[in-house]
Length: 321
Image 1 (cartoon, rainbow, N blue to C red):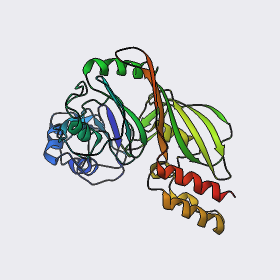
Image 2: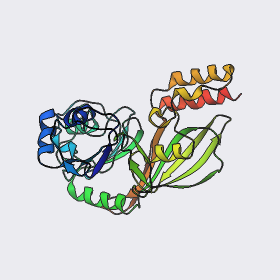
Image 3: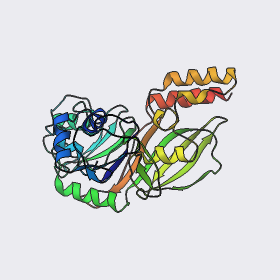
């Protein structure tokens, strides 16, 4: 949360309480300490913890909340689908619902807890709470993630991600017909001030580019391939929604079940049946290609579509019969 700004959406609540409600894993006393130290400002000024906020007050945060979350990783016997492993890297097929590393709201039950159980040696460049983690996937995004076993491999992999030489392909299902069969979505992405867990296209954000290609188009949904050029948080989901085609099942960005309202009853019922297969946003990290951190040879990995996405694709086909 370093250098972030929250725009207050209620009045009369204490500053420490307002923050505690949004960052539930951080104790009130820890928040008060940050406030006293001047790392949390309101409208550019230091305030006391009991300061009563007003609507549209700007809370400036110059702290890393995740540093306040317990960093010890408790090894947990969580099954992992290992696609590939050698002395330098592990390639994991992550299921939907599995958070990558501990953070606010997720202290355990994460991919890193599983990695700590199954592997003795992992890189530690990203700190004790993220052993081996070079890049991330959203909790409900399934698919391929690459893990570094040692710091040398981590550095070389991180360089490739930073230089954007890693090729990534995501499979997704979106609402509606796209006006173009393919192209590039360019739009800087930034955290929403009123909700720090949500992102939006914002000219003041970080540069983001996503390539897209329509694989199959139906009357109501489109089967897509996405090719992210950058790696911003929620990037594909934000960009797809920005184009008016949110990812199917993505409640946060307008792709949830409420979208079926307004169709004729016959179609609404069929869509309701489709949603019986959906309990997350339907986005899957399907392929990745990069240079091996030791040999330098180009390697690539792919992951089969998970059953829930296969079921939805089949249901969509029936909808258009």
